[in-house]
Every structure is written in structure tokens, then in C-alpha cells.
Image 1 (tube, rainbow, N blue to C red):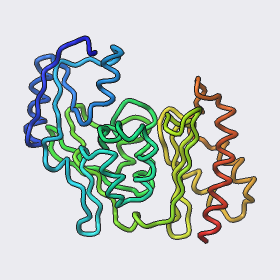
Image 2 (cartoon, rainbow, N blue to C red; image 1 turned 180 degrees about the vertical axis):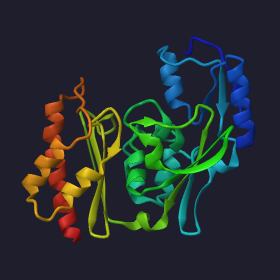
Image 3 (cartoon, rainbow, N blue to C red; image 1 turned 90 degrees about the vertical axis):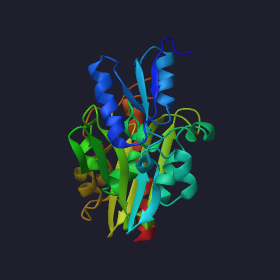
Length: 278
């Protein structure tokens, strides 16, 4: 049960949603944009999230697009993880989202909610970082198209009133060889100790991680190590572990040393997998 009351709005356009956000915000309502609502409901029940107004974006047509058009995969922010999995336009992304929560919850979690939420793992972003996708945002200052790496560097870098409208992926990334490995403490469906996603693009390995640090990341420095043919597999693994861009998580899920151990095993698997691809 949520211990506070809030107003509910469902605008039909992005412009109306942004205007409504700013009006409610100026009135001290602390509004939030709402997709599937799983994170908001869970956190509000634990008194970790508060608002006096919810703006549901599921009624906005642009946020519900899911199609390949002009050699681009277009995914609206209000499509669910189930939508992504069942359509399977982007097999790596589809595989990743099938390991986020159980099927019932996947039918509620939206792409925008997973990307923009406060839970640190945000695993769907792993495939998107590898595909160098673009994000379409709109707020009171207008619409902008930005590379995902520009807004997902450690923290989400968007304006408070901006809506994530769509994610745009170049079609060529959809069919590249890929690998996904997820390690959890107990269950198949659980927050990750480590999730790794990798693709082979033009004979180069691209790689991203969740669960290692307090944010998901892709590191060009790590990729340079992985693609350095002068290094042995053992040397690459050692250098990658030394090049993690931030403090490795140490929590009730697992110690930092245990995560390092698992990382070595996961990287070894990635080397073997992509050696087969050539």
C-alpha cells in the first residue's frame, strides 16, 4: 500500500506532458513521469519515493512505436520488456530483458523506466551502449537527439522536465554476433552480481557491464585491451580487471573480490566465444 495520495494524468502528446510537468512542478507537486510504474510503486510502498502527481506517458503515440524503418530500429520509451522480447528485433537486447525480473513484471517494466530508473543496474542499457544508439528527448527547451553515451555516463544526464521519447538503433547492429552472461547470487531472475554484454563488430569486441560498479558502463580503454593482439588471454584479463573505471561493488550480494573472480571467468568465456566467430 502507498501511504500517500497523488494526482494522476495521462496526456496525449509530448508537448502536453511537458507543459503539465512544469505547471505541476511550479505548484510544488514534485511530479514524475510514469511508464510501467514498477519502480515507483515498489519504492513508494517502502517510503523511498514521494510525489503528489504522476504523468503517465503511455498515451503518447511516439512513446509506443516499435518498428524497423529506414534501416533504423525505433523503440518508444513506453514499450515493455515483453514487447522487446517477443518482437526480438534486437536479439541481444531481447536476451538481456528476458533475464530482468519474471515474466509478469516484464509485462509492466518499460524500456524508458529501465533506462531512466534509480535502480543502479539498468541492464537494458548494455546492448544500447554497444550499438551507439541515439536517444530522442523532449522538454521545455525543445527536442534533442543525443548519443546514449552522452546522457548515461555514471548518472542520467537529462533535464528534470525532459521525456525520453524513443531509442534509435542502426539496423546493422541487430544481427552482429553477441554474448550475454549474467551471474546472480541465488536465482536465475535476480539483480546481477555481474552482467556482461558483448558484440563482435568489424572483428573488434565491444563490451559493457552492469553490477561491477554503481552504474552500468562501456569502457573504450577496456575494449582496447581486449582487442590488443599482442597480449595473451591471461594478460588481457589482468589488465581489464585493473582498468575497471570505478570502485567495484562490495555488498550483501557479493564482495568486490568475488566479483573480480567472476569477471575473470566471464571474460575467459567471451574470448573463447568470439575466437570461434573469428
